[in-house]
Each structure stands twice: as C-alpha cells, then as structure tokens.
Image 1: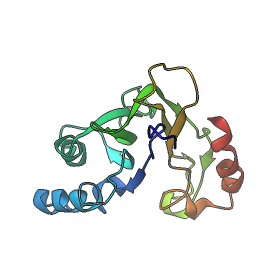
Image 2: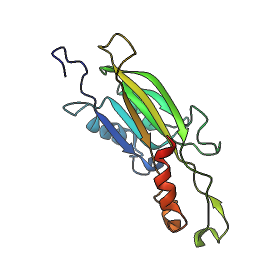
Image 3: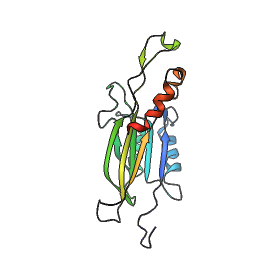
Image 4: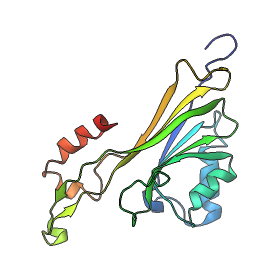
Length: 184
C-alpha cells in the first residue's frame, strides 16, 4: 500500500447457501446473520461470492444483500448460464457500494463438461452431471483514475462434487474436477 492508500485492501467473503438450505428461512434471522458476517465485521467484505444462490423473485439473500449496501455484479443466470433454463441455482458476485474497488469487467463461464453419470439412486439410468459455472469480476481501485494497470480478478466457482456428484466419484469425476479450473 502506498502512502496514499492505493491500492486499498480487498476483502472477499464466500457464502455457500446450498439453495438456501443453510440460510435461515426466517427473514429477520437471515438479515441478522448477513449483518453479522458483513456490517458487524471490523473490515466489512468488499465482495460477496454466493454459491448455490437462487435466482428468482423470492431471492431473499439477494434482496438482503442490496439492503445491506451490496450491488449484484454478476450472476451465472444473468448470462443465461447454467444452460438448463429450468435450473435457477447460480453463482453470484456482489460488490459493496461504498467499497474502494470498482468493477471494470465481468463475466460467466460454463466450466463443467457434459459428462453422463449413472448411479443406483437413479435406477442406473444415465443422467448429465449438473452444470457448473464460474462468475468473475475484474476490479480496480477507485483511487486509480484509469482502467489500465494491474487489477484483481475475483472468481466464484463451485467445482463438481458434493451431494450430486460424489456418489458417482469413481466415474472420472476426479479428472473432471481437475479440468474445471482450466476451463476459465
């Protein structure tokens, strides 16, 4: 950090809300929890990375983020990702409105393949591995007057694994996980 404080520190918080299964359904409790991890911190996060958010009219977390001064920068749904229109599960990036950082670029990418998996739970019928996406934002300090120069790229990706794919782990999933970061 220079004597003028540029570039400022950057703080990132990741929240995997498991389609709201791990986020309080009670709005007051949800607001209290989000306040605890953002506004009540000594250094509030500049960026919130939400994994397994839900992109619909009942997006309580998104509404709360905006109420606490965060603006949605990017969502995998905003760019028609994931490719399955019936899926509303997304990765999202939010930037604190009074952050010392600003976005100068952003985007979303599909990082998973169209691998077919089989498992006893699905009666051994092949099913496509759930689509995995990454959202990203290129940030620069507001104190720098030009967009040129060094930047920070924040990437929010949820690699394959977890409750959907781990039951099929021996079906080349380790190779799939290794390749997903390379697809960015």
